[in-house]
Length: 390
View 1 (spheres, one colour):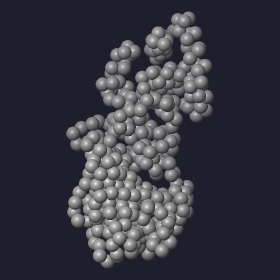
View 2 (view 1 turned 180 degrees about the vertical axis):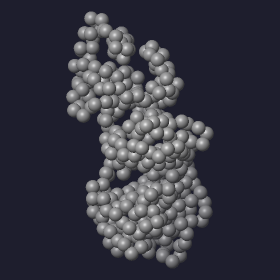
View 3 (view 1 turned 90 degrees about the vertical axis):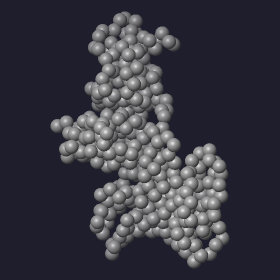
View 4 (view 1 turned 60 degrees about the vertical axis):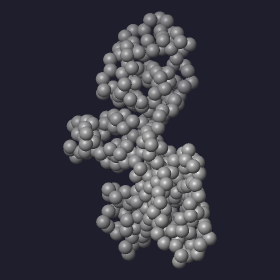
């Protein structure tokens, strides 16, 4: 096996250098092209180019290039290659051998998993209505907290769940707050049985009397809600100047303070969205937009649910899709806790991307986007400076 791998690597080097193969290498290459895994990619009808990028760091890429004896520059962290079958198969094989990832217009290879990009040492924070704070992380001591009308239980895995404590409405005041830092998402359960997943850099404030007289929560940032049905008490999410009222459904709300709009994506059920005098009822698969500083509500009938919820699966984008580059940049900023500084207006605002994991280092993500996005970037002390290439 070791000898076959060495031959395959030598074939790759020759193909990249456009050098002729020996008879033995040619026979080996013919056999490689018949492998089912290779044929699967070769038979994809929409492949006109492919992007190969390294997901560990620049030093790993340099070491790899030295091993297979090809030149390396920082630009090679992400590069586009005009499509042809033999080169596609060669690079696929090298990706398999080295454990790197390959993306083909949204189709990911089965490479080995890489390290998570979550910030080490960071955790979600619970602040109780009486002002106490708890870091919600694995391997902590299990805890049971009395927080007004709630009993909050935290497991040794850091999972938070609220339970009714038996107190009546009118005896409880204040809020219990769950916050996430950049680079981290967190799921927990409310006392009515509803579940919440907070995206990074988000906050949910839960009234201490939640589920006794009302089920109203206050969101800053982005969250996924799976709401338990309760006919008498609707579930209400307040974001900025908007209100989202449901009886039982699942949906995503994105309302970061620096976003141009509050975006609500309905996955199942029905949802009433209101702001000022305006009100709109959403159905499953639809999206609403409330522009910042406006009471106008816009309906988008065909929501891209995969893109809206990609963060739940630890991705920036879930599959091949058309996105706004400025929106992707905001996602990158929040996840890695970095700044994007525009030296020009963005030229290629609308672009098509494939699946992009949030486990990927930030430089590699930008290297993936810079070709179709038509920009170059420079990392400086104050952030990433973005400049158009055309």
